[in-house]
Image 1: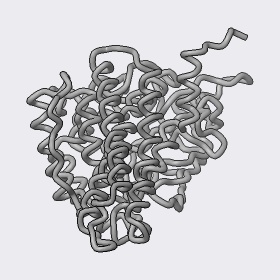
Image 2: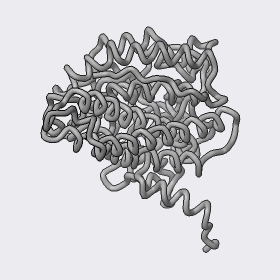
Image 3: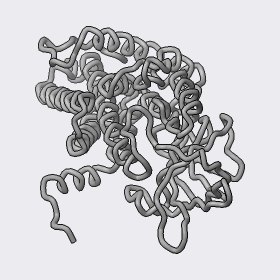
Image 4: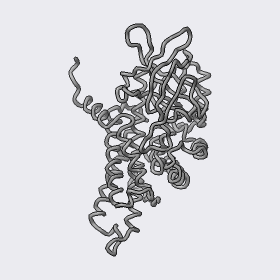
Length: 399
């Protein structure tokens, strides 16, 4: 159940009339279309329904960061994160699927191909999957074992990938691999393998991962068995929401934006839990009074609300810095760390305040709780964020 939230009396300087109008639109869409779909489809553990994907495309949310000249909204990291928070308030998977576009998998050397795919990305017709992690390479992407062997003007890709969300349903798969070039480890590069929706490319097989949450996006274990890729399928990994560059460096830079978006998704989940809890405490009567009259519970809600507001302000601050060209690797790690840990805490408190009812599927709290737990893991675990932050604050002497 959605609860009307009064806007704060004091608006930060980055809140403009245009952003306020955009917020009104996405909030209405999220509450009237995304939330009912989440309540209906999340428990089926299948992909986000096609009608909702069509609506996301119609509203332009697959091209938030794509320049207007390519049919995108031409907006920045701030708007990308703001929209993601609102979508996550209803279903985090919907906020996640839009990250599979945004110009992802379009940065080819061929300008005509790049322009065509960028337009398709903005229209929601070029939505991909990231095949970066492996069974033995999660946070440590530098240790990936999938290889691409050069044969004439083509590459032959072999290896195993894990946690490839949307790999079957999407239009392409981004495969990070190591170029096999002699006895020494070669450079890391990324290929965009085009494919038809609801199929795998030739030589790719997969099996879905049985997750406890994050339904709506099917995650896959993939095997690449002598998969052929053209030399011109090599691509810079991220679209317009990431920095330009090549290979591993581009992935690291793009992850900064992804971490701010994850912080926003975490805030959306925590806000959902808070709002649903407020509504529940006002209607659930025990000992002759609504639960919301008991001071201990009121104070818990106060703490929850303060932590949600704090995390939102921080991610918006970092997004604003990024849109102004400030390098923010440490700050992106900080906001991701704090917001996601906050979401785990707040959704857990919300479930507790619902009592036994929170541990059922009769309420959405259990979905927010399950999904919040994942935010501390993907896009770099909390421990990885702590490492990034501590290495900037306490640099180690060179070895």
